[in-house]
Length: 202
Image (spheres, one colour):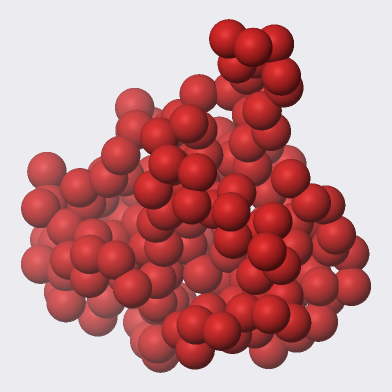
């Protein structure tokens, strides 16, 4: 397995009951968008897909920070991935590389449509999944990958209770996710689109 693809296993269900009987709302599979009070310049106007969220913390990727665009074959070479089976048409297709966040720049995460699954794929709902193994890139190189594929370097992470506190003070607003938003809305339009539909407070 490529060392770049170290990633945590997807978390527990979205809603759990605490010992006191109070419902805890978790945001796995949802979007958060930077609010007007966001002071961290790394996240101003950021839209983040939450991949996992539980009592221990949260992990997500910033959807609207593009590093660059280039052929899939060149991206694979940069990651040191040499697939055994290749489709030249697939290798020549352009794909965006995005900055998933400030944490662990050696980690690569693939977010993709849920038509593709392997042993490391995790569904987050709404036709969206993510994969922590390079097999998704190898499948794409062979022309057998998902219909939609996004590749991220690094991620955004929060410790226990940190994301909830940031939402409470207005740093983030919560919004519905789904394949149409994650894969079809142009990155330059994501902030305005998601913010217009956001608003849940924890």
